[in-house]
Image 1 (tube, helix red, strand yellow):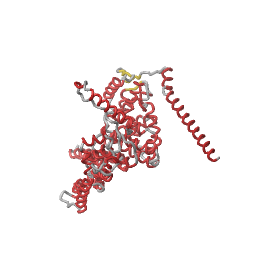
Image 2 (cartoon, one colour):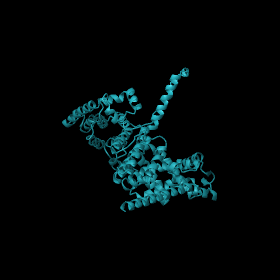
Image 3 (cartoon, one colour):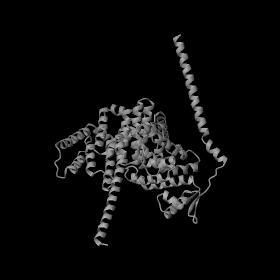
Image 4 (cartoon, helix red, strand yellow):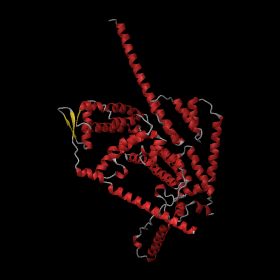
Length: 548
């Protein structure tokens, strides 16, 4: 054979392989763009929250995982920066797009001067209240006297703090936020909220001087002081602890709570963000219950809350954050928002259910209770019911559909491979890729073994996208760590499942476990109906007497 022909054949083979690899990469990028939810999520986020998402997209471009370009992301950043006061950042992005030597537009320079001028004006306008917030001794004194509120501060001529000064302070907090100074904005909003809060008074502290117990006057004075504090505590109206002890909430304070939550997210204080998220949720529900929010506005607010919660719940350590997210998303009112306004949130709900399912099941088995509102047996049923009402799909959703609805294990294997790439390119899920794949394999194993008493290791390895030896090691670890009732037959190279026969007594107990709770709820509902009926009859009787 001619050696030149061999060389040409090798070159053609290498060219075909390179072309195939390029085609696979292009297809992978196209799918990543198809699965990208940035455009769907962004309308429900604050503008500043988009910058972390765009930074992550930039890293994906560097890793050649998405079909976008760095200039596309830079142009998006510049468009987002226009309504803000982060002029220096906007100038850096402009140079990135136009070149390092590009001349900065005059409107940007003018905007920068205007920002500094406005910032100084706001600082001057609220300097008295700012100094008071920084004076810990004076502030503590005013709080103890019950004078740390807008009315008391504005009526004190020595402080020179008027409602207009406090409003300027709020505007300065918003201005700092728009400048990208999230920590300062967070601290200022904390001070502002404290004016409308009523936390419980601290307990009286002892003086620690045990040698003066014989001093009757000091002892008597201390008793009188303690009695005064007890009387003051009884008279005090303590605010709602879940909303920073606010004594009331209105739409204006709700905006402040949203600002506090946004600041906590952007400074990545996830513990504080969890508290702020709860405060926003409770405020929304209170305003909706008192008709201060229309049903449509309440639906919009709940949709925002679920989107903002993605930052908090997927960054909270452990699975507690995901469990609370699942519980929130499965709440009837929030589930309505998913099915009608934001079906793309089904991706995150499905992923969270798969990640917490085993933990919830283990806790349910240990406590034999409903696990604080979550029940592993109902999680998948509720998820599948939600999937049927959502006009949305992606590999994660299709993976569950293949296993739980179609029982298509080959299809589930294909979707699991796609899930890995989707997880790597999703801002919220990327840190959970390895854990998700592990839990997904367990899910496949559980479903496959549920309909088979004996499973060939090679077949099971194919279903789990693993070779036979790796599948055997993985199953051994699973049996050991998860207390799975199964064993491996080394001679026949198969997994033999144990039979879990439950007695009639256990089945009856499971069926009637929450019967008392349901009966109590039914009795309470009937009592409420009867009370309302009696009140209505009384009102009609009074109306009839008045007419006579």
